[in-house]
Image 1 (tube, one colour):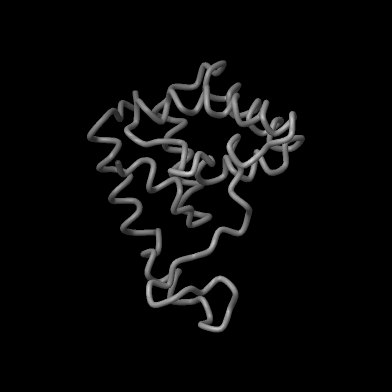
Image 2 (cartoon, rainbow, N blue to C red; image 1 turned 45 degrees about the horizontal axis):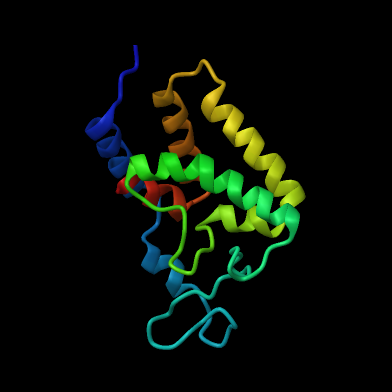
Length: 148
């Protein structure tokens, strides 16, 4: 039986990321200096989507998706040691995109909630699946959440 918990899962993720995920510096280095996404000497990326938060104004549909994500993922994020919110109140990573498009984002959030809470699949296997997909798509978001 597969039994990867706590530190062993973190060690697995670290080894996998070192082998397959490119360093963030290599991703930043590929951005042309004249592009709209290039900023100052820090080479920071500008968000592609406008950060969405209740303070910044949300439609009724966006507010529903925001609150569902905040309630569900906020609990799991707190357990894992990371926040689902940026300092400005917007949601981090893909959750901001879900709020930006509430019809699709709401459906994706419901599917994700179902997969997390209504499955008989052990969480270890779900985590390994997430890591494998994260490697394939070079998802820095997935590595960040599991490294902390």
